[in-house]
Length: 167
Image 1: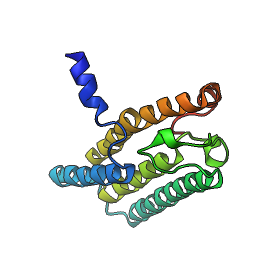
Image 2 (image 1 turned 60 degrees about the horizontal axis):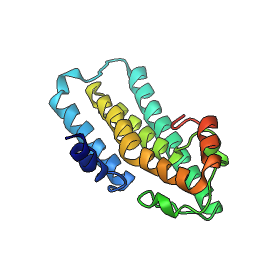
Image 3 (image 1 turned 30 degrees about the vertical axis):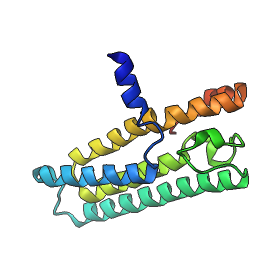
Image 4 (image 1 turned 135 degrees about the vertical axis):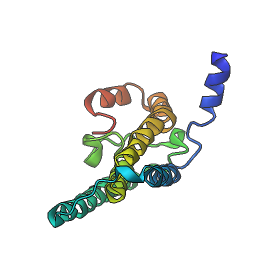
């Protein structure tokens, strides 16, 4: 039974492009916010509304900077940006944003979902952020890291010891 479960779960590994996964979780967050519309964080104080939009802006800007910095680092190293084929990596990138996070592009997507959760102003929608991170860790990051360890060996193991997966 565990072998069947492992095979079924393995079929999801590196199959759905992360931007699509992000959109799917954003949709679920929106649906949750609609269903739980009575838990909206509301206020009559204008300054809190301003804080909401500042938070949205900060999350979006930080998310975009993180993701773009990750892509730029990959392009400079002339390695693949394709998350569905990690076995085609030609360089281990450990500079730039990759000194702070092993997954700055996924971190950027997570921060975009944080902005979305702020916009939705629903506490329940924040479960989507947790779900996204768990999904990405299991079905995207773990398979990628297995492939990178197979390609780069001890250099990748040492890198994993120095740099956290998210932040």
